[in-house]
Amino acid sequence: MKKKNGFIAISIIYSFFLCFTMLMMGMLGNYIHSKMILNKTNTPLTFNQDSRLSTKIIENNPLKDDFVKDFTKGFPNSSTTSDDITKGSGLYSVNDNDGKSYYFRGAVENNYVNFAGKIWRVVRINGDGTIRLILEDKLPTNYAFNTSYNERKYAGYTFDNTPCTNSSPCESTYNVSSNSFSNTHNGTNSTIKGELESWYKTNLKDYDDKIAYGTFCNDTSYGSGDEAGTLNYGARERLVGTNKGNPTLICLDPKDKNNTMRTYGGVYKLKIGLLSADEMNYAGLSWYEPHASDKNYLHKNNVWWGLSPYEFNSNSIAGAYVLAGRPGELVSHYVDDAYEVRPVINLNQNIQVNGGNGMKDTPYVISN
Image 1: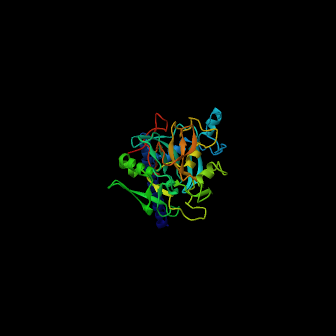
Image 2: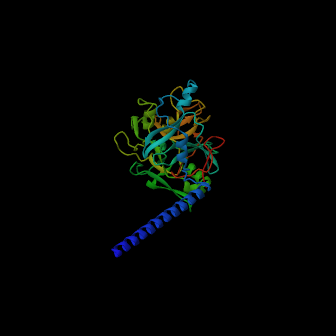
Image 3: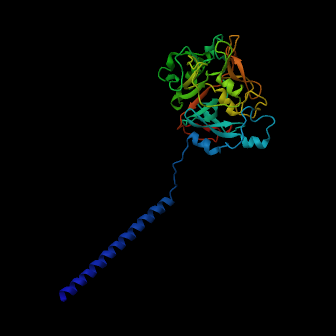
């Protein structure tokens, strides 16, 4: 009996010691945890903030997709009410070749960007996440789209090349070390392409790592008319012809009436280019009355070149879409005329902002 009572006594003491040890360890753990919390409370907290340009644009611009859009008319125009200008100007979405694109339309005031020591306007976030910018100013000199005009091929951004298609786009690759561009598909440059690339080499070489290869549409697809006479290209039919008011950001292969691929124009991958007429139309510029007023963010007082071919007429003159000097208007001009040039580039999808809110006096500032 004595042995049994001794065993019980030892067991009780051991159990008490074990409980006491666990209690002390718990109290010590709570103390350390509390101390850590106290230290954190007295130290400023830092957050992993997303400062990409695309994120800032979407955060600052709720989508306006529910607003009724009529692409046969300019927006805003002189008859647009101030209430509709507020409701209708801003960011919209539509698909392009690479996914969902977010584009600005109307009287936009918060899409200014300071990049490479120049002021740009955001046109859209492309479907691949890159950001398309157009220079707010223009090149110092006016240029022809092509100095030659009497063949269909001169409506092309390049010509005499193998076809530039979605499956095999024509690319102008840029080499930083040699500061030079070279064409795939053996294309010959249009006059305006050569001038844009010369400007890039002088002004954007040091920022090349921030500039993406973007999809550009020089749409030489068949629209209507006669391949041997007056030929109307695809953009003309979408924005002016029987199918007017139906722009698209989907690039089309350069097919003729018989579905043969053309050897000029088409789908490009470029470091620098021009806006298509469809992009201008989405932004609020139109062919038909009423034209967009000077409140439209793309409005300029003079004529500047676009990228979309308009027609080749029976008088053997190739034509290309441009924005005319009359407020907010899209009209065609002969390719050998000299007009203003506003370069278009695409920033990388992860490009960072280190200041600004997109307003004219406080543009988004791109990080170095």
